[in-house]
Length: 94
Image (cartoon, one colour):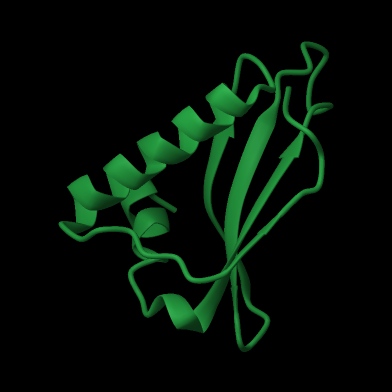
């Protein structure tokens, strides 16, 4: 899938999906944090919309990644990203 197609997965009524945010740290020997952004709709269809490889697991880095995603969404779709429901991992950023 192209990046644009992944971005367009969120181009829908925000009441029709849940946005999931999660991170993992053990994908490679380097253990860079990888943040995943996905959605699930009423049909329980789970779809990846983005992932970020971060240099550190800090609140600042997670916030910057999400801000960049929002800017890219607007640039590609010419719309503001609107999210009604979010589920995030309870893991603690530093």
